[in-house]
Image 1 (cartoon, rainbow, N blue to C red):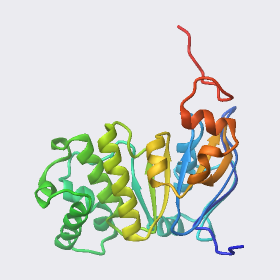
Image 2 (tube, rainbow, N blue to C red):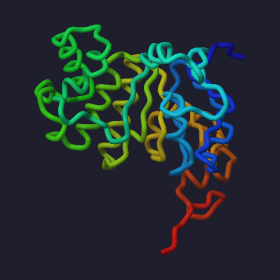
Image 3 (tube, rainbow, N blue to C red):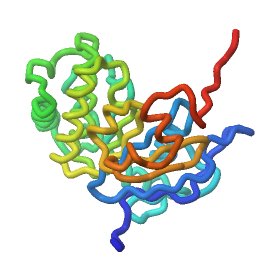
Length: 259
């Protein structure tokens, strides 16, 4: 058995908001260099899991370890240091409207103050090139970009600091099938380029099949199945089968609001 320390380790993670339990008992290990994709329906706890790892939410109980270091209850200065290992592609790209594209890409570099503005701009242009955007895009404002281009800029920003861990939050939301495939291809290539560990949350099965090494499904705040991507079509789980095939009938009951 591999005794390596997981890059990300979640044990007994629980988070509730008042009486509503969102994460019940989440357990998950993500190994160094692995691309793990968490799937699940809306409201299943995917985003809350991500926010707990990032420290945006504090779990009620449980453990979150990065490279073996416990993050729950850690001092803010230590958390900041560990979070500098992270890159993030947000769901809506989340670009700053007031900054030109290159400054959006270089935001983390400039914040860390390890580079001059000229150096940061050079790195930003190189990362833009890596995601298929020409140097002239660097001076544009986000408002001048299409949705697909904004997503590419968001990806360039996520890899700009050569992070050890990259989070992808619904990376293909709002994109047409062709652009979704382009973004999925770029994610695979860019993660490989920087040698990062990737954690993605999505309900887009085309993304899962393209970018995952392993898949975990969350339902009612629990990880109900974890395994290699290649086993997902014969998982033996009715929940997985219903979800990946988009069936209305099955054990997963959608809450339908009646007017």
